[in-house]
Image (tube, rainbow, N blue to C red; front, side):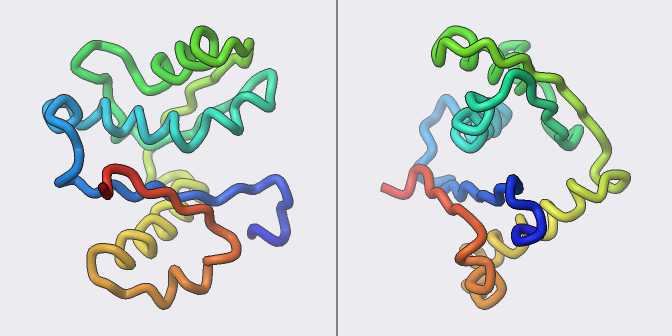
Length: 135
């Protein structure tokens, strides 16, 4: 897929939960939203509009802001961009893109959780990995 579609970007963020501060631990959706920002904002900046297809698992943060609200705020006010974000929530079992990403996520998860890196090693040239809170 990565070779066929040149504008397709595959990335992963891995978080060491023990290193996450108490604020993120109290509101796991805030951590999710932060991770989404870390992975998407550089790509969002390049476009006038972006449709973000995500699983319904991302619910509103305790503060009442959704992931899209959070990303839109960062885009407008912190990055001074005019990119408009369109939220496209869907159920993972009905969307081939989310099914594919869940498969990739499981491969990356297995590398860290089970110490099985062989599948992830096959993706090494095609996937950008970022680690957070590993210090």
